[in-house]
View 1: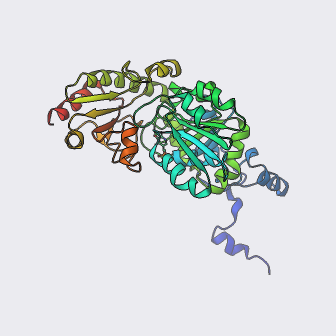
View 2 (view 1 turned 135 degrees about the vertical axis):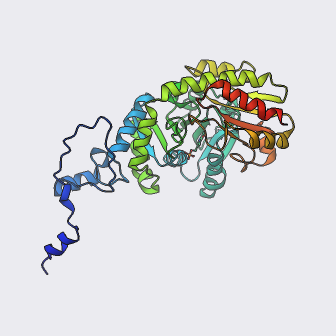
Length: 398
Ligand SMILES: *Cc1c(COP(=O)(O)O)cnc(C)c1O
């Protein structure tokens, strides 16, 4: 049966309409390639590209120009050979983790890590025959002690959510690599590449929730992985392709815009946070402040050695009076927004025990210094005096 070309034209079903179209406008900002698929030149290149998806664009789950641009930027910022863009921080974490573990393996990770990462290790991977040991990763000797013959992954989050504990990446990398076949993955979300570069310190892969500082404006959910090309290629194929945590072109484009101001945003986050931490530490209604830039922080010395340009915009504080006091403060702040997430230009406040870390048992939380009266502050880039005045008036209502 012949093809009725009239009908095809009428319904605009013929694909190659724009196949030969070459953009002539030299856009300063990259265009958004809002397309799911790409026209391939001929049969032979279609065969080749389908088998070598890193050599060109075939289908947006395999890669897109906007993600490609973002991946090159992340690799450069993290001093890594290659980068990979994903649909969320957890997409990046689960993809990176799955690329290095198999049934029967053992994983070592920190006692204070992001809530859903903890759930991934304790509630999902355990069903697949992966066992784990939680340790205080700020003590490298505890990491060493936990390593077993079947350990294949050591996973470290630093600074750690929400108590801002700092683990010594270089010391852990030396320990991990004195054993054979163990990968070190570092979640560096709280630092951003502006304050810390785990690959330089010996990590095998670094992951970020790009939803946070990399985007900076709270407009996308995204994640990235950076590392050696061979490892990133494996994360892309088959793991990202088969699990499908693909970042869409528009989100990748938004991230590229956000990252242009990463440096100046981080400088302001750091200077605002330092002033607020010092102020809170002296406040009579505050029991304790957790900020790695304060000499009172237990891992201040590691932070000073490992982080550059500042200590970040994140802190937690124990308010005297427990959960009732927290309720008063959170219900009465006006400049801070009551919201989870972090790393935005706008300041946010959350209650870690009931929000990001509700999945831990109270015993596990208390052992990790996540107390019932604890708030986590993501300090934005507003005028610092406005932020201090806001906290002051809310604390006065307790
Ligand atoms: C937010 C966050 C994640 C998860 O990232 P999503 O983009 O929300 O998936 C992982 N690790 C840390 C440290 C985070 O703050």
